[in-house]
Image (cartoon, rainbow, N blue to C red; front, side, top):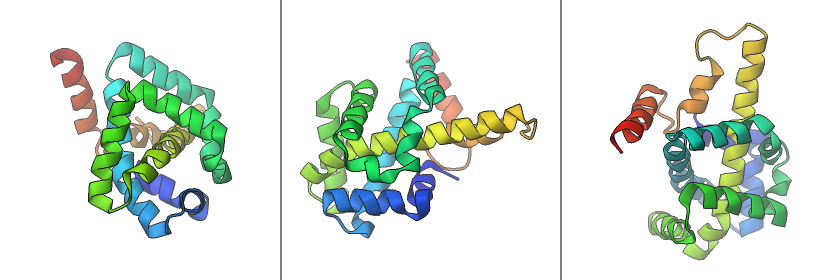
Length: 181
């Protein structure tokens, strides 16, 4: 299951419901915005993970499991602490608030939702994306520890950043960026 579907289905749709409520959007608008914002965040995670330091930081953050709370308890998504955590994630991934603003502006053009609302949504998206990845990583580790996983198992879905069902293109993209800049 790809990252977008994981988030859309988390808690029986509670992530979408809570984001919608926090931002004053309809659920279909929130789903549309997630469809625009989440792939950009996932690509940034993939790009960041293409460096040794970036991959180590990502795996370290996932290993702590502290982000999983955003998927387990979506009512936290509008809290100041969640927004602060999400902004930290975005700062690490994008490096600049200008990039976040540009992402929101492009998503606004595609969804018809105001860029100001999408700028408020981005930290929530980053937090819940890390939560979903953390949850998948924990599931992969549990399966591996129980000897039920063969090959990459659940980790394959964790590495499928673009959600196309194949990790080959994602891993090749990481390798190409690493070796060819």
